[in-house]
Image 1 (tube, rainbow, N blue to C red):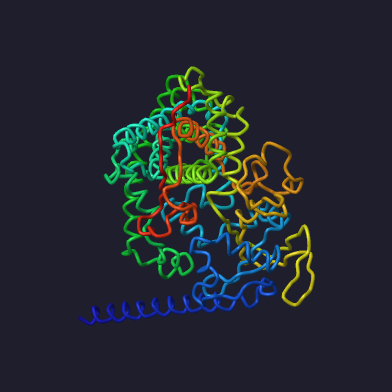
Image 2: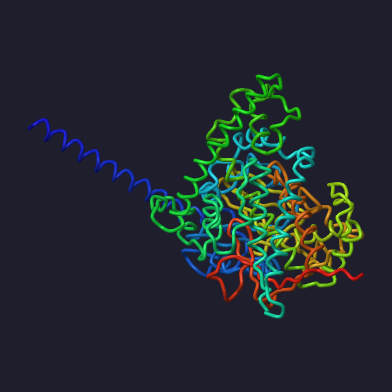
Length: 562
């Protein structure tokens, strides 16, 4: 009995000590979190007043008009300014090209912030998008061969097949509607999302989700349905947002977003492990038959996962740098969400723009039909698509004007001095030719603001105009540190989008099938379509936010004049 009392007393003391240690640690972190902004050199920058102590200026960026606010603050405070984040933390916002190039090129010194990595890994796991440092470098090295130009050539038929299936389904839908019924309103985003999900599942894993043939409102395949519920919530997930900034809240796992994430992760793990095991078995069988694991063209090289596994097993990769099954599993949701959400929403914004500019829609249709007659007598190749100047112009202008991600964030891993193209004025009226940085300082790269800047793109920088790409661009565009087409859309440096060629080709194929076959106009007023950033920037209808992301359009079959 005495021994039991001693054990219970020891257990009680240990429990109290653990609770006390936890409270002390959280108190220390809380005080440090609240006090650190007052010691950051970013406090010397000019910027707008905070509207909320809890949410800072971030509350103003969550209403669907982040670009408008960031552009206004840029005009008022210059190309280097600061805003408040949660609980008063500073964020430096800069559109200075040299500063942004410094942030992107020094990827070992500037990481994604912890809150962003948490939110990305919440569903994606610790895959390429959320990994940092050497871990990111190793993962990217193994995954790069899967996105090569030669592989894109091999999966073009998959792009064509699934896009054509979408076209046929939409044609059947329109044919089933009574003439003059006025029921030709279609949420084109839902069809684009299902199409791109089927494309990435087939080209990524040789696994067909077959979501296209589902009727609107039906529950999709289990993984497709789980992904849709998580990435398209009906309400802004405020608790998930706060969990990014307040780690203590992450113990709360009973909210709706957490439940959906658990379901999605469970489904992804079960399906993903099966896919990986099948792919490894196939590669090993090929190796046993003399095919080896080097990156030669083989029967199992037709999807991204097979190529990644084969690259991972290559003799050129040191054993300590190879990905574990868990790390490969984390790439599957990365492929799925990054590979279909970005393109689906990017193409929907292209259609939105073409609805607002019917002359551009007509010109694009004429170019497509002249190059590829409606009898499908001319085969579609990557070269023939890339040879169409106005299609290229529409894709570039859409990705300039409507980048799928509006902004990106970085945090300094150490003290630094960031160089500038031109000086800025601090809050004391002093001109400064650099940004002083302390470890832990945060930065925001406003992608859309830079993509639309009139200082860079000329007086019509804030106008959607594909024709700008058919002549010489302003010389200032060459200074943008972006990966592709003088745009910040895919960022730059070692953290640049690994699948940008995949996305561009997919977008062209989708537009090829849609614009040749249908005429589009918006089913609501243009000003009623708002951008909502949830992983990517997606369209929503102002008075129908409870329905989630959508792009309602009026569609008609295109009738070619004889």
